[in-house]
Length: 219
Ligand code: BEZ
Image 1 (cartoon, rainbow, N blue to C red):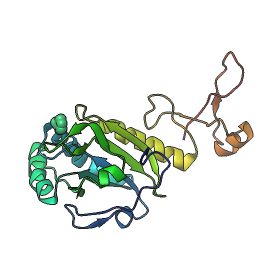
Image 2 (tube, rainbow, N blue to C red; image 1 turned 45 degrees about the horizontal axis):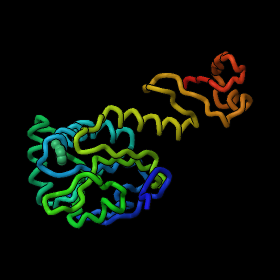
Image 3 (cartoon, protein in one colour; image 1 turned 90 degrees about the vertical axis):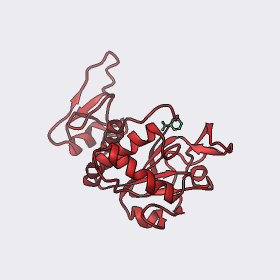
């Protein structure tokens, strides 16, 4: 079973959380969402990651994104651990819910299991997985990092901006793109369509093949 991946509709999971019972579809409510798992509470790398996500929560909210954490610990553990995350993070509050998955069912459903990590009783634990969900409830981007490697939240923000740019303007973003830089016109857009889409103009690179497929536009 490949499990939840890009293009799939996220299941409407129901779970206890630090914000009470959560029904995922009600919580997302037509917004973008980022659901991210961590291997376990009271662990060092996870503390730095969830602290950084708390620090960026307002920036995600400005982009219309709901955040949801998840691990196999219970709600009481999450609630106790949040005090450490906030203290580490200079008092910045963890305002997003963290779901409890003590039976390890949600992490399977959401394709977040780390095959190489087990808890002390030999049970599967989550990887550092992250799914970006679009307003249509479909997975737009996924990644799974091992427990040893903390995620780069600046990269998460960058790819979110790329996804939102692509959804709004029907463009792609090239290698190492950053917000504000030129975007790429997708290959399935003809030059006539591109003239309509980008009345301010676009640049076609002159490459040896003369195929004219590498086109940049500012949007
Ligand atoms: C950590 O967050 O530091 C961590 C968690 C599980 C395994 C290894 C590291």
